[in-house]
Image (cartoon, rainbow, N blue to C red):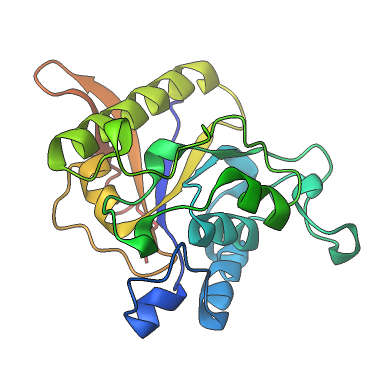
Length: 221
């Protein structure tokens, strides 16, 4: 069977409440942590998750860690917390999943800041200037469209590699606006820590596209 790809919107972060968009890479609120932690009981089929890809912005990383401690490897957590599992799933930071705009709230932290804050995250995928909204990470429509295409191509490759495995599903933790470019659904507006499920296929006209799973099987909430 093919992978189910779950697009997950990050939980509530401080700028969602304060509307202070000058706050650089804001973290989750207390409510945001609660929203994310509820994924532990509400998210479908955790036993089938093979990969968790996250935007490297602080709120997305925190959503991933709080939402999937029963799936992710225990090296990402404080040993005394009891979170994480032995030989668990890796948390992969994907800079192409960062939010679209160049506002400070949608701009990530430098690698050395993330290294201090989050235990044992693999930062090799992040260039020293990954958070600069220029070049391939620029905020204009064309650049963001290309970025979304790269993510879909990566998902297609993962889908092929995981086909037939017991663990084959892919979780993608990202942002509300970038999700529109990634899914091709311009009216998508998931609640904080909400998700929608897709399969990936290759369309002759449009290339690699995400196709929503039939509503009877969909687990968005």
